[in-house]
Image (tube, rainbow, N blue to C red):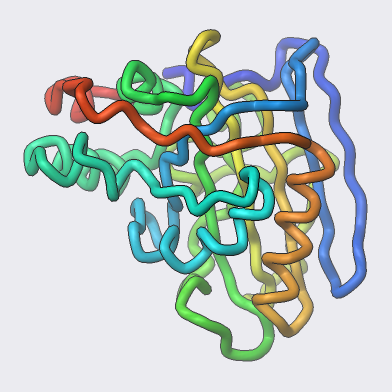
Length: 243
């Protein structure tokens, strides 16, 4: 399996940095990609071991500033899923069992109106209680990485993987860290080409999301939401077998 696979075995651009409010960032890019002006179809939010439509509803206003100022719907709010119960069930079952792989994103790629598909992951929580976007159990890291392909982000649902080498490091034995990542999958190249991650140990979810979306704007300027094509059919069996 080539889960979310672009990093490793190739030379990549990578950086780590900190910001006010206890936010620590790491970025990774495939070689020679053009970072500015990406058009984006939002896959949604992976949280608590599953794709969560509610989580995207909560964070969408924060992401609007990084997506051209437009309110952007996720795949789970689109007819391609809403009007096809078999596809919706297959998507839920597959992501619960195996997380989100490049192979799964590629199944939906023909329906993406954008040049890239954005997957967001959320885990953990700040030291104080926050709004509903905060995951109750930080059982998975927000890194979208290599798992089996030594990429540094996790395959198989963002669980049981090592963090990106040189990336944000969660303090051991603490749940008081809020983690967010955004991975960009190239429709043309059929693999993930960019990853931005943040570990935040401050006390405000609003501050955390503001810091993360500001980082996205700086790293990937000019992103814009393009949504999904309503008339493209996705085969539920392909969703089930994407591993």
